[in-house]
Image 1: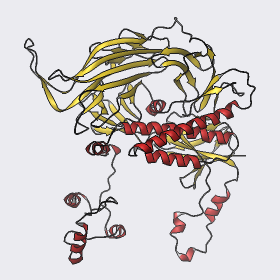
Image 2 (image 1 turned 30 degrees about the vertical axis):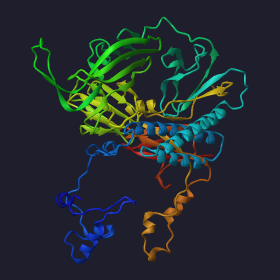
Image 3 (image 1 turned 120 degrees about the horizontal axis):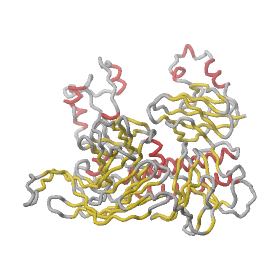
Image 4 (image 1 turned 180 degrees about the horizontal axis):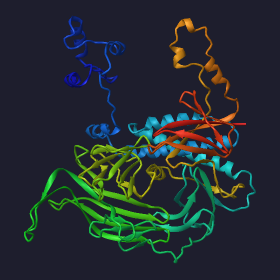
Length: 611
């Protein structure tokens, strides 16, 4: 019980006694009996007594998020829990799918003039959170099935509204819905016997890849794109420069060199005399430092290392373009001390024209599993960068925060930035990272007990808003494949628009009435009970009884921003409310948009009402 630490460090030494419901301490009643004679080991008090009889400390300190490290990874491994990493990957993927489906379902109700009812969404959200990262396997399976069915239903409902009652001319097509509040370029899978006519608005091209036939599409922010489909082969152009050849991948932003000896990424660099931005390998970290003896013919002294060697046996070109380039390497991780195989790997490196991203897919075949401390013994994806003074930023609750300590958690992205370049590592839901040395970061893939063997990571170059890169990977677009006619309003459209890229629209909410009480009125004495709450009555009367909804906005980069929110109709009234429905501010309507001021990292509920 760390009483000595509390007596030394706290301004009022105290211990909070708590227990699990099913576990009882055999010594608790002994403490109670001792307290009845004299408070020699301390005095039992209620929380109310504690706060009444203690003073505030003379110095009040603020603590950064980087000073805290959650114990969940260590506890999961120590408790022999399965999948200490994959549980987070699955939860974030499940949560992203739910958020996208809820966005579509809410929008389908609003576009048909219905008052928004989120009762079912709240029930499903409770199911998702109950499955969570600590839920039972049967709870996770139930949540996955429910969310998949809900996503299909919500996409169909929104597609029915968008396509409407237009004349069905027999033109089959895909309706692709972007639920994120920024535009993006995505690769959408289509059937191998289908294609899309060249020149279709929004279409970049169609290409056959190792993952099947993909259509590369530009999607508007918080909107949709409709593409007609036809039978036949995909059209490819030989006029474009090949994206891949031998050990080199490229697009219009940079080039990626694959190391023939390791199979990892040797360097990612811009064109011309540009420095290497980042390198990548797969590695097994040993719990203790290894001594590697040099060969008899090698006069160099023995070396020490914490990591395995990545050895490539074969590097093959999968796809050369014109829109997607892919290179795959096969090899093994070798113990440098005894030359034994630790794991086999297959790594695919992919780049897409039109996007400053590098996608990495890894598949592992592990012979020797890590054991013990998950922060010291693990399989990881290692990244090396050239500038030891670069700032390391992590994501925390959807916002950018400094990484701080060598061990840190970042479930959305990690950014490495200096004065001239920014590199974003995003693997949404993969939370555990460790800095090793001045210029190395390990993304922990497999600690003890982990059963997942396939992992993905995206490297984005000079992405000014890294949260967008993370959400782009986490939340795929929803595809409705059974439309028989284009939407009557056009093949492309949007529902919401924000003019600030560091502000994300995260949820659509229903209207709430202002409460007829306040914290002040609750604590008022009886002598003031007869006085009317004039301010409260005034606030209640200004809300019209009309159609409307609310959206939740979040500032992600830690910058104050004034942004304009637009939707498919111009509202007649807008306000910012708190989470209990009270009005915080009346918002000005400028033209067809609502002006919203957001402070750094603010989460704001904006309520819109219409005539």
